[in-house]
Image (cartoon, rainbow, N blue to C red; front, side, top):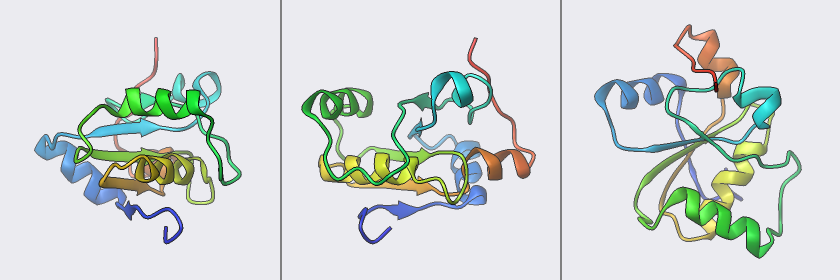
Length: 125
């Protein structure tokens, strides 16, 4: 978290934001076929990141991330992956901060904690 420069949101807080209709972008950083397609947080979009910390991100991937996140640098953005030990969401959140986004959160519990709390999931068609 310190290296990434982002904030952290709990399962309960994220669900509360969703229930209130808080405007935000939720990004699932897991592989599409192996994970996102099978189960993701409702409304989440997908962009895969690797597990090891990414110290360099090529220009094409930076542009892809900027396009996904949009022009509003103050937009609330939440990144998540599989579970606490998975660092894909760390990479996504860290790079969003490096690209100048200011309201970036990581949901470290990931889809595992979301399903464990018995909250609804979506599947990709």
